[in-house]
Image (cartoon, rainbow, N blue to C red; front, side, top):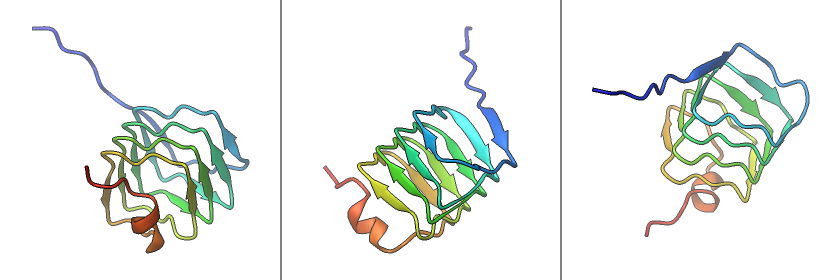
Length: 108
């Protein structure tokens, strides 16, 4: 039997000190990352596990969260412009109420 390794590399206990552009976090595990008032442009979070992170008052522009699992995060005050959230799962995460109406994909 042949198996493909899907172990996610882990990035943990870090703070974003500047804005982020064209970064690829696909299939990573992001744990306890911290960002306040930072802008993320064209960042891929595809199939990423994002847990215990604090992204307060951040802007996400054209970011792809397809298949991401987001748990125990604080995303209050953050804005999302042209982002993709297909197949994303959420657990115990703080968001603005408007997020549900304006960002999540419509049911097909």
